Length: 236
Image (cartoon, rainbow, N blue to C red; front, side, top):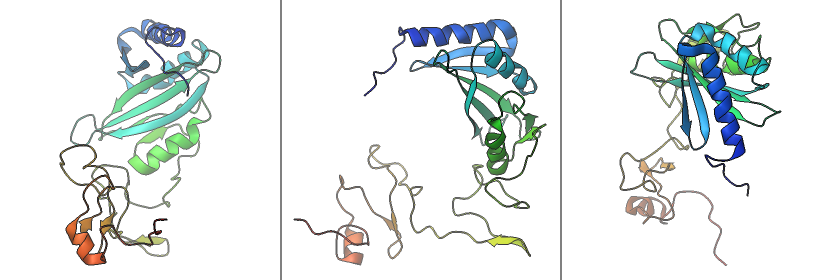
């Protein structure tokens, strides 16, 4: 197992230096860096200038690989969306995150495909799932859902079971039954074990508990065993 990075390791010190250089270059446009568990993040105040910041990070600081772009729905807050760029440099082996906020009203910022071509599919996925557009993208089409689908499934106001849609000659969807899946959890709970995802038992609308906990009585009454339905290998 690889040894965890410490705050005094050469790679962490190198990353901290690169983050400071980026901050020094752009001044008040950049806030941070923030460090958490030997990882560094910087905040770009103006989303319109993200490509400029990314270009400097690539050309001058050696972050030649865009690992990923992710999006956060700050539902209930303004700005609603946070876009996170995960950078890596093959020369110095350092990681760095850049973050910027986008309002729900605007929901648009410039593409960084002009900096890293790998941004193409990352930006398409965010557009498809979150509804944030990337101005200047060479081919901003949906990548998972079909063209014309009216919703953005990863927004926090989108129900877990989905929404019904009727698009004649294109496609249709119906809400999925909440019959299981890792998203079913018990609210509250005395500890993290009690809050772990469970499998919903359709016959009782109960939740199958973790093997480390006492099995639910109603599950046993419904299935004759103190575990959920399904084949169980006999003990040897």
